[in-house]
Amino acid sequence: MLSLESITKTFNKGTVNEMDIFKNFSIHIKEGDFVSVIGSNGAGKSTLMNLVSGNIMPDKGIIKLKGKDITMYKDYNRGKLIGRVYQDPTKGTSPSMTIMENLSMSYNKGKSFGLGFCVKKDKEKYFKEELSVLNLGLENMLHSKVGLLSGGQRQALSLLMATMVKPDLLLLDEHTAALDPNTAENIIKLTESIIKEKGITTMMITHNLSHAVTYGNRLILMHKGNIEIDLEGEAKKNLTIENLIEEFRNIASHNELKDSMLLA
Image 1 (cartoon, rainbow, N blue to C red):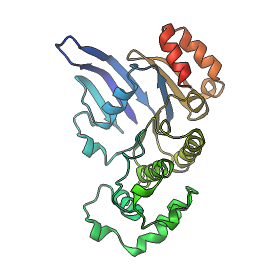
Image 2: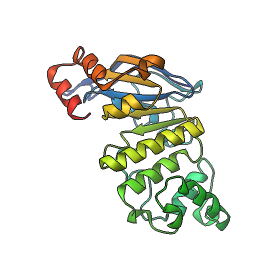
Image 3: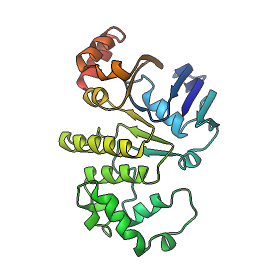
C-alpha cells in the first residue's frame, strides 16, 4: 500500500545547523493497516508525515502509494489520494464558508467544480446523514459558518471531510493533541469507527501512549530517524503502556524518556 524506500532527508545542508533526519529509511504499510506512530521529539515523526503528504521532498529514495511512484508528486496532487487531519482544528476547514460548502468541497474532491455548481439542495439529506454520525448536532447547522464551531466540532468535521471520499491513505497528525481530554476521547473513538467502517489504511502520529496502545493493529516507535519498535497482531494487542515505557527506557536517553512520559 504505502512504501518508503531508502529515504534520506537532511535539513539545512551545508550549514552549521545541518541535521540528518533520515538515512536510508524504509517502511512498508499494508492495505488496511491502522498504524500508530510514537517517539520522542526529533524522532522524525513529523518529517515522515510531511514526506508522505508531499509537503517536503526526500533528498534520495522513493515513495510509492498502491504501487505508484509518487515521490515527485506535489502536495496538491497527493491530496487527491491522501486525506489528512492536522493537530490544529483550524487547518482542516474553511472558517468563512458554511458547513455545507466545506462538505461540498470534500464531496467533489478530485473533480472540477465551482461552489455555485456543487452546492445543491439534493445533497443536503446526504450531508445531514453523514453529520448525524458525529452526534454533535451539526446536521442542524448546515448553513452555519464553520468559524463559529468549537475546536472539537471543527476537528470532527475535518475528520469527516478527510474521509467522505475514501482516500487511499489517511494521515492523522496528532489530531487529538489540541483538544481537551473529554473531546479528545470522543474524537479518537469516532476516528476508529470511521476507519473500521470504511476500511481506510491509516497512519496516526500521537503523543498519547494510551491511544497508541489501544487503537490500531500496529505500533511503531521511532527514535532519531529509525524504527526501533514495530509491533502488530498479538504483540500489539498484548502491549501495555508500562511495557512500552520500559522498552523506550532501553532505547532513549533519560531526558527523552522524561519528555515521552509527560506526553503520555
